[in-house]
Image (cartoon, rainbow, N blue to C red; front, side):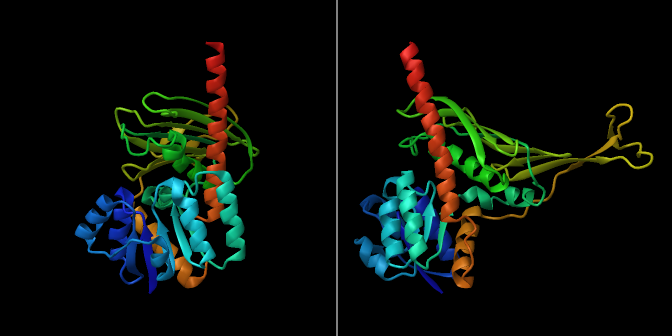
Length: 332
């Protein structure tokens, strides 16, 4: 049984508390820490979990920490935990700055602890199923649109929403990045609320990402194009569509869909599939796999290096945005 403490009892923190309590064969929830009396009162009333008024006191009594605090405090809590030889689950983005993430990487090299970053879409059941089919994609298009919510506006939309798709893309494209371009605008907050980014890889793959937090509707959809296949993943509805092509052999069935490619080229048989998706709570699954990596001394599914890589790309996109915004202001 892994003794764990939750640091942060806001909206997402209370979800973590609930799911950790459900994983009672895996975790023993010792308590939580949150400086907000309002957050603490709700967590105690809803889940009957003990509140610790001192961060260090809770950390001393656990084997692992679950960091669900605002991003600004991620580094402080995580660095103390790693130095205290505690296993760490830390929500995305891993830290506020790249320098902080680099320090955590260095600390982890010295400490024998597991660190997992909460890029929850890796555990979305539709993406887990799609991962069985995605192989060497050459064009990727993502749309992550959200209706306006003041919660999360303290960071740019790139770190709030787009970073999910950045991590997904980096997990399936096994190539170095060659070039990044981006454009975006601030509409209701002080940082970009809409952003479009283009990532070009050395292997020729191109990813086009769009994120907005002032949309009239919610959308979380990604499309992957690869040789003889198109894969569409709806992260919101947890649905998957796969279209594959293969060379036609013999005479087609009357109901087959056939693509004629011209004289001298083999015709293609088009096959449509909408696989069944297992019901799965992605947050609960990522916490379960975190415990599994501790128990079996195996690598975490989303490593600290993965979190750093996603933050690095997000930071590069933000730098491109700032350059373009400054250029537009100088022209006007």
